[in-house]
Image (cartoon, rainbow, N blue to C red; front, side, top):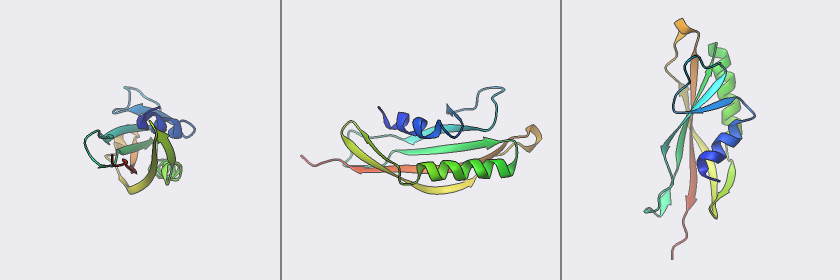
Length: 119
Protein backbone atom coordinates (compact mmCIF):
# COMPACT_ATOMS: atom_id res chain seq x y z
CA UNK A 1 0.00 0.00 0.00
CA UNK A 2 1.24 3.52 -0.80
CA UNK A 3 0.66 6.67 1.23
CA UNK A 4 -1.73 7.82 -1.52
CA UNK A 5 -3.74 4.61 -1.13
CA UNK A 6 -3.88 5.23 2.64
CA UNK A 7 -5.43 8.66 1.99
CA UNK A 8 -7.94 7.37 -0.58
CA UNK A 9 -8.94 4.53 1.75
CA UNK A 10 -9.52 6.95 4.64
CA UNK A 11 -11.71 9.14 2.42
CA UNK A 12 -13.76 6.27 0.92
CA UNK A 13 -16.34 6.20 3.72
CA UNK A 14 -16.86 9.98 3.52
CA UNK A 15 -17.33 10.76 -0.18
CA UNK A 16 -16.12 9.76 -3.64
CA UNK A 17 -12.46 10.79 -4.07
CA UNK A 18 -10.85 11.81 -7.36
CA UNK A 19 -7.16 12.48 -8.08
CA UNK A 20 -6.19 16.04 -9.17
CA UNK A 21 -9.43 17.24 -10.82
CA UNK A 22 -13.16 16.73 -10.49
CA UNK A 23 -14.44 14.77 -13.50
CA UNK A 24 -16.58 16.75 -15.92
CA UNK A 25 -20.14 16.55 -14.66
CA UNK A 26 -18.90 14.95 -11.43
CA UNK A 27 -21.45 14.61 -8.66
CA UNK A 28 -21.05 16.41 -5.35
CA UNK A 29 -20.30 15.97 -2.58
CA UNK A 30 -16.86 14.70 -3.55
CA UNK A 31 -13.22 15.11 -2.60
CA UNK A 32 -10.47 15.97 -5.05
CA UNK A 33 -7.05 15.06 -3.67
CA UNK A 34 -3.65 16.23 -4.84
CA UNK A 35 -0.29 15.01 -3.58
CA UNK A 36 1.73 18.20 -3.09
CA UNK A 37 4.86 16.33 -1.98
CA UNK A 38 5.52 12.63 -1.68
CA UNK A 39 7.90 10.38 0.22
CA UNK A 40 11.56 10.92 -0.61
CA UNK A 41 14.33 8.39 -1.05
CA UNK A 42 16.90 11.16 -0.67
CA UNK A 43 15.90 13.05 2.48
CA UNK A 44 16.22 11.94 6.09
CA UNK A 45 13.08 13.80 7.19
CA UNK A 46 10.19 13.65 4.77
CA UNK A 47 6.66 14.96 4.97
CA UNK A 48 4.29 13.75 2.27
CA UNK A 49 1.61 16.41 1.91
CA UNK A 50 -1.89 16.25 0.44
CA UNK A 51 -4.46 18.92 -0.27
CA UNK A 52 -7.99 17.58 -0.04
CA UNK A 53 -10.55 19.79 -1.80
CA UNK A 54 -14.01 19.10 -0.39
CA UNK A 55 -16.71 20.01 -2.93
CA UNK A 56 -20.43 20.35 -2.19
CA UNK A 57 -23.51 22.12 -3.56
CA UNK A 58 -23.54 24.68 -0.71
CA UNK A 59 -20.97 26.47 1.40
CA UNK A 60 -22.33 24.77 4.53
CA UNK A 61 -22.08 21.40 2.81
CA UNK A 62 -18.44 22.06 1.89
CA UNK A 63 -17.64 23.05 5.48
CA UNK A 64 -19.39 19.93 6.84
CA UNK A 65 -17.53 17.71 4.36
CA UNK A 66 -14.26 19.46 5.27
CA UNK A 67 -14.94 18.80 8.96
CA UNK A 68 -15.49 15.10 8.26
CA UNK A 69 -12.27 14.93 6.23
CA UNK A 70 -10.33 16.79 8.94
CA UNK A 71 -11.62 14.37 11.58
CA UNK A 72 -10.72 11.33 9.45
CA UNK A 73 -7.23 12.58 8.64
CA UNK A 74 -6.20 14.09 12.00
CA UNK A 75 -3.52 11.94 13.66
CA UNK A 76 -4.09 9.04 11.29
CA UNK A 77 -1.51 6.28 11.73
CA UNK A 78 -0.41 4.04 8.88
CA UNK A 79 2.54 1.81 8.05
CA UNK A 80 3.79 1.89 4.47
CA UNK A 81 6.81 -0.10 3.31
CA UNK A 82 7.86 -0.65 6.93
CA UNK A 83 7.70 3.07 7.83
CA UNK A 84 5.22 4.34 10.40
CA UNK A 85 3.43 7.54 9.37
CA UNK A 86 1.31 9.87 11.47
CA UNK A 87 -0.76 12.62 9.89
CA UNK A 88 -1.45 16.14 11.01
CA UNK A 89 -3.99 18.58 9.60
CA UNK A 90 -1.90 21.71 9.05
CA UNK A 91 -4.48 24.04 7.52
CA UNK A 92 -8.10 24.39 6.53
CA UNK A 93 -9.28 27.11 4.15
CA UNK A 94 -11.92 28.06 1.63
CA UNK A 95 -11.12 26.99 -1.91
CA UNK A 96 -12.01 28.55 -5.26
CA UNK A 97 -15.77 28.03 -5.18
CA UNK A 98 -17.95 28.39 -8.26
CA UNK A 99 -21.29 29.65 -6.87
CA UNK A 100 -22.81 30.16 -10.32
CA UNK A 101 -22.28 26.45 -10.98
CA UNK A 102 -23.51 25.52 -7.49
CA UNK A 103 -20.06 24.30 -6.40
CA UNK A 104 -18.44 25.28 -3.11
CA UNK A 105 -15.03 24.17 -1.86
CA UNK A 106 -13.26 23.75 1.47
CA UNK A 107 -9.61 22.62 1.44
CA UNK A 108 -7.99 20.47 4.13
CA UNK A 109 -4.18 20.40 4.04
CA UNK A 110 -2.63 17.25 5.54
CA UNK A 111 1.00 16.26 6.17
CA UNK A 112 2.30 12.83 7.08
CA UNK A 113 5.41 12.69 9.24
CA UNK A 114 8.02 9.99 9.71
CA UNK A 115 11.75 9.77 10.12
CA UNK A 116 13.80 7.26 8.23
CA UNK A 117 16.17 5.24 10.37
CA UNK A 118 19.79 6.27 9.99
CA UNK A 119 22.06 3.53 8.69
